[in-house]
Amino acid sequence: MYLFENAVLQRGLLTNLRMTRGFILLFAYNALLGLVVYIAWPQQERLDLTTNPEAAKQLVNLFFLGQYVLASLMTPSFAAGAITFEKEQKTYEMLLASPMKPRAIVLGKLLSSLTHLAILIFASLPIVMLCLPLGGVSMYEVLAAYLGLIISVVTFGMISIACSSFFKRTASSLVVSYLLILPLALLGIVFWNALAADGKFRLLFTISVVPAVCGVICTALFLKTSARLLRPPDVGSEGNEVIDIEEEAQQAVGLVIQRDQFPDRLFAPAKRSELLRDNANPVYDKEIRSEIFSQGTLMLRLVIQVSMFLAIPLMALYLYIYPDHAGWYIGYVIVFNMLVGPVFSAGTVTSERERETLDLLLTTTITPWQILWGKLIASLRISSILTMFLLWPVLLACVMVSSYWNNLLAVAGYLAIVLLTCLTTAMLALFCSVIFRKTSHSMMTAYLFIIFLFCIPLALLFFTQTFYEAGTPLAELLTISSPLQAASQIPLYMDLVDDTKASGDWFFFIGYVAFSLLLNLGLLVTIIWLFNTRWRVAT
Image (spheres, rainbow, N blue to C red):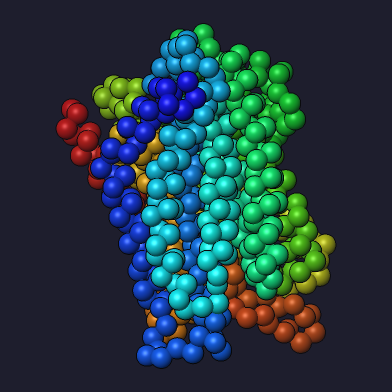
């Protein structure tokens, strides 16, 4: 029932492992890792492995940490929709009515979601084994690293499965999974680098403490998810996706969103009690008042609480104790928007396709431009306001910390970077929503575009600085597409007397502003053209 006769596991394995994109992903994953090792391989004809083992150790660490980051980012995409997919396909109640036990269902969903990811990880093992002859790293350290990687992936998968059981849509489950997993992944990277000098202790810690902690987390989440499937509170709706916000607020624990009070009404206005005024945009009014909140406020409450919980130690450290590193806190705000921004825009058009209401919408008197700006502004308003909640500590720091008094221009630059990031993530997600037919495909493609623009240039810069210094100038030029680089390079004057300037360059800020404006303008023109083409075809 749990393994060999688990129908959920068997169907998941057959579906996931036979898909063409699975083989393409396997090839691309190993080709990328192999290319990294090939480029970073020492170029000397003769190597003295007894005196320079650090090069090999650095290469193995880069290989492992790169794979750890990739696996952490891919795990929610594989597992966060395991149960929400059943709800979206209206097969959730039939699954619960089957003879299978809830624990067997959860185990089947977990294993079927992570099997393909496990194949990717094990397929890369021969590549890292090629680095062992260079010295500096033992085979036991590599095996311990892979053990920690597999255990971490299972833990992240269990977190994603638990989130999938609490939400009705994959988008909500995905963003909450990322918010919970990314801090844990960063903690694992910090731990791995901090213990790099003591390989034996890191080895023992990885094979003893890490499995125990992850085992406790997985067991608790597994039992909680199984109990939720045993007595599901969301059965009997017959596919009805509308939630009573007032009833949910009465039953909510912790933060409660009051849609008639400030500042909640900025992103969650109350239900309309009067007629819509003339010349108003009904698409915007529907999106901002009902469409986004039809699934309830659980996801919004979790996003706000988790983000603020993580922001407290970061703002204390980087804004008040070490104000010369304020760019790091802005980086956290940017990463938050990278996760949240696409959620509200990626389904704006695809949801109409999935409900088969797009043709009806296009035959109304509402113009394509009104449809587009209504959906864009509604989603951008929510994501930007949620992001701005994290910027109030920056304004408070400008008042309380004297080091910021002659850095108001830098603070304005930080604000401009965050606002442009909010616009870019929303525009990219809207573009993907126009292109694709399913919300899940639209959202994952939007995340890929964002990672490619914001994170890949930084990874390339780090790689060239470490292994290939000749390509550093070109890699630095490519980072103008990343707001993280722009925020970290804004100069800060930390001495009120002699205006001592920290290292930085306004070139990256100007380059990012110009690149973002051109990118968003190009996306807007393309979206309008695509929508107008669809409009003419429909009429």
